Image 1: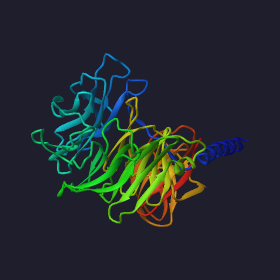
Image 2: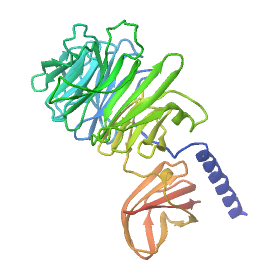
Image 3: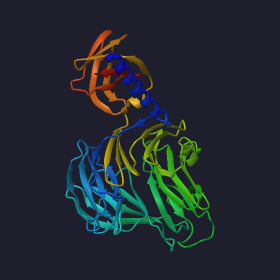
Image 4: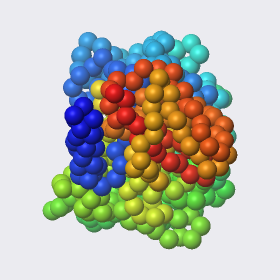
Length: 438
């Protein structure tokens, strides 16, 4: 009777897990919160970014919730989420879009007083550069490019600063443009992608009054127009290899039309990911946006309370991350997520969760005395992890050499009663095995 109850419990639990999975269009990945922001409400934070060594994170805290506070960057240990120190505050209500210079000397953030610059080592504000619509840093760490949102004199909509002196050295891109918006620079530092407006602010003529253009920095007086649209562009970004350019577009007219535009810099082909491509996978339709390159073939898309990982080359949803975030940064294969309340989460993009399994075993392996018995048909080197049935990792057991025949895998920690999944990853594949703790 005892074993019958155990089997029935397993069936019920696994059936519930299968039903949960069936309701979602892709594997759902749960991430642990690294840092808990002290604020509640919406919105309270302006983003997070890795330092160049990947060991620390800077997150921007804003005083929307507590009016007596000021905008302040916070330095956080990426290994444990410990708050290390605060930087000089900005005496305004808003700071966002943090970026760090290649050498790790400066932190930049847009604010109500202009583009703020901190010395990271001392935490002191060095100066405020002029107001900008957006900015980017050259890959070689020598220049900062920012866009001007209103230039009725046609002197140019792009300013250039020397990062050694923090002084303005150039202004260009007149071309009869009256404003600049989002801006990005290619990984080789040779091309700028810029969103520009053709009409002065307040002009209500032609509906198509904005464009995305490419500027070759060896010839700043010419440009290539990629796309014209009306009137909102949210973000623009090059892929890590520089082969693709992406931006997010919204059209507020009679109906909202939202899509992500991906342009192949080599073949000149374009890929469009419409909001309907996403919403058709779900039972509801909502706004999506904030596209970011995660690597050379996948992007992230904010959709409702999820962050979607989309393979834009295969045009399919790969997985979903259960963390609602408009802000993220990538360092190597590590991803930091920041929500509006200041909560931070880390995700290793190289890690394969049990929910992403490519090959699964239905048979159970034996668990006894905090160890597992695993039989192999071949010898190989593999890494092992243990997950609960929700997909959350509960033990990372590290690398182990497996031999033909019986292998013992030490758990080395107590596990509550329940069903678990052991993953064994070799160089070429991943296998999953269920086991029962009773």
